[in-house]
Image (cartoon, rainbow, N blue to C red; front, side):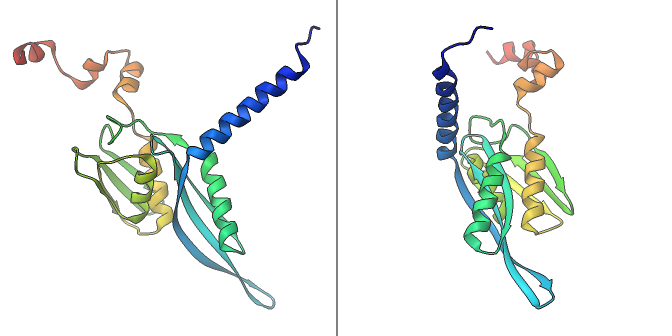
Length: 193
């Protein structure tokens, strides 16, 4: 069995690590919520902290994570690491808004996300606003129905974002052209010209 250069594998592996480090350095993070939690033990209560963090590159990738620890900085670090492992990619129209309106659910939380015209801004509640800022969305209208629990709001927002499709993806699934997905007929296009 022929083997390549012994140092070759290490270079490739080192290159991958460098690439991952570069991607992680581009990610920004936002602390959404910190909560003090108590564990009742024989001698009384033992206090800890739970943190909810959203990370993203502001160009269509975003993730969320939660972490618990006895100290706040350690809880934030754990949450950030978990969020980096749970990144999703969301297709954006013109790099500023969603392609279509979408609903999301998580527990008792329901969210409605609507695409918006340029200049609208981010009209959303606190936890959802953090997700959109880290995602890189500039124009969106969002409404949370049901719960104000930040964990459920963030999870419902991510549920909605995973349901977002670009016209190109839908066209590929249906074996159609992108113009067919929009339902624009050729005759309507000729009348405008």
